[in-house]
Image (cartoon, helix red, strand yellow):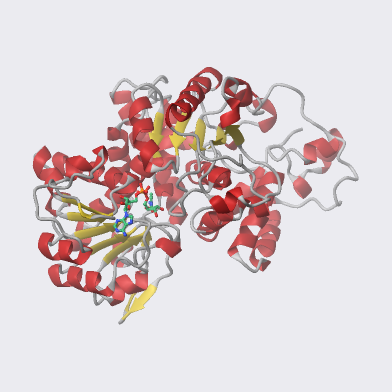
Length: 554
Ligand code: NAD
């Protein structure tokens, strides 16, 4: 099993297309970079302007056009159109300009793109499986033109970022995540399959919108919904038995049970729970290098007790146990505050995933009161509620801690619990800050802070790559813990001096390779791998990564 980029012509059975058909194949197309020999061999002569450009020159043109677009959404439309024309060039441009491209192909702009998906829709990308496909999901999966699928990202569109139910318009998320699998993790684009399970929507605005692309029905619930998910999972095992399934942006009333139901049977994980858990844990492992102490010294108060919050809590508690605390002590250092106040034992309204963190304590209705009584070293915002880390909250954190840890992780930027500027200003520049969506550097006094982005893109591409290169049968919590450690290990003293808890995105390929190696090593150690272990795991991983370069077809 390999993600190495073979000559695309070898990937699928059948002859190379020629002429216009070749120019319209996004995997094989090179546009003006087809050489004279290739133009002759594949009936392209005359179909292209005569000058043969290098990929470097083509990227210059891409960036000129991209930068001329007046808004991020227009840039998204521009760059995804390139992806539909010429994938190699798209990935070359994305990789060469990752810091500029990431906020466009992923959060925050992808959120806006999903909100407008039906209106900016140009051509389909990914596979739509609907409530009407019961009994024939295998056939729908077989309609996908590629056979060697290794990574599927699937959503049902019910909780897209912090934007709520966007139904089938949520397709932008699996498409965007898989672009990052390739750009950041080096998984071959032919091995990636974005899927939306369109089970309807409760979004009345979309239901009334003539340009909405999904089923105009209310959501499937109960047994009808779980039967559809069951059939989908079984169909994937039949058609793509080597594919890992990444669950993405399901609402939390479905996300937890789906993960629990399948995680010990098939190769799957939920990025909102486990990916977020790992990326936030990596930040919390790096933070004590600034604040002093260790992970076991932290008291963490979460604003929000959903998929992200509980996912992070579980990973943090596991890391604290590994650092020597008992199970009970580790859990007691993680506190949750949800829409109804502090999560405490006396509450009778708690769903199952919150109960392990419901401690004996007096109730608190205000987040500020919870801070004053619990005196956390870290607050983590995963509520989807903007501006909830108020001046009072941040000043209290700065009073209690010399270097308060503040993670405002809600996405997109408009939902962030506070801005980077607020975090630094209201703590006199003492906050150790990370956010979910990117923020510009902030000047405070004579220091410039470069806030780190606790972006899942640091974790899932590397985890996926590690699973693919080892042929792992299952994805375990230990793989995510190792991924978090590998990520934290990539943070340098220079990063920390800038207040940055994550390595720069420009290092993402190196970071992903280390994460993949750690994950694959767990697979080999725990007898979960189906591929023989190479001698030098890191070099092997690197050798398997897709590179966006043109192959010669002659
Ligand atoms: P979710 O719906 O599962 O959970 C949201 C939680 O917030 C619930 O527990 C809810 O009770 C709580 N909440 C709502 N209003 C609140 C309020 N006013 N005060 C306190 N708590 C409140 O959603 P999720 O999947 O956990 O995602 C939450 C947010 O985290 C989203 O904005 C998402 O974009 C973001 N997120 C960020 C990252 C990242 O940056 N790495 C990863 C995953 C999720």
